Image 1: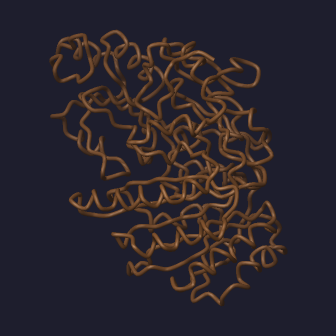
Image 2: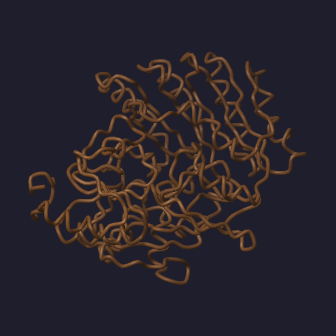
Image 3: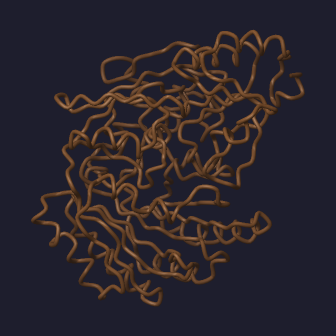
Length: 462
């Protein structure tokens, strides 16, 4: 492997150096001609097609430490893969080293302390299976194939968020491998500055090799979907807004203009109630009063079933281009923009989702964590999806047009986990008043910006 193959690398990486390094690894090191290479670089967003020069499938922390040392010594650019679900495709770098943590899936639940220690390769389907064996859970993603690492480090919106906070709000401690090759314990007592930073901007400060989460009692939930004709989309969103204003914190919902299984457009409410079963009907009643729906799938189910509820409508491998923005209020003007643009979408696979937050998310002080979007009660996610790469221009243009029309009505903030690969100029919007503090911490812990293949915070001063 010669210098030209290493993309940004300024130091030669010879085949002999790679082979010597490989001999000390326990995990597999895949080069582009290796069996399994193409499968290892496949991620959720089919629009992202990059070819790392090397992929290290880490078997443990020692492999990750060795990868950081090798990359730093030879000045090789790196990317970090957990679940590979991020729409920007940050798991993949072109011509560098992908440090693949997806094989590290250890998890230990302590039902007495109500905590779980989990490795970064876990998806929420795997993590929830272990915690639910004890009737416990913590806030996770809304698609079970999402990796715990990326979601948590960027904030972590999930079905339990209004009651128990974001995924990052439930972090107790992490083990963090820094750019200098140090493995640090990061929590409220040790390395407190990093503990603040990793809860929302953790992608920038190193590789988390272990997460410790606070768990909560979560038994069967009452969840599902209420479906309405697309012609009633505006009225449904208005009714959704009013229902959200009075919703208990145990109720988490998202309204969407979505494709049906037959790809005809529908309007729907997806939600999860995880309070006392005897109060479930009352919690759902404000949404059921609008209608009646043409389909009502709401029922009691295991929490793990709720976590898988929208897996099928959001499969991996499609061409994806997303934008998002936070709203303090779902105004009639915003609803008109959403409904009008949805009617003109170029792909039947495209969806617009309005997530309802508030509750425990809003009660965390805006300066307590790097995640600063505590005033965004609604989060609008524009999920543009299509199958033919030749259709990219029109789908991207539609998505950008919708965002441009909606953004002036928003808070000015954005959820970092929804940022696309072309939105580096919006990273500061994700952290707003925290950006300079994060830049100063970046300069302290990663002055050379070694961890830069992410929603990047550049080293700077406070």
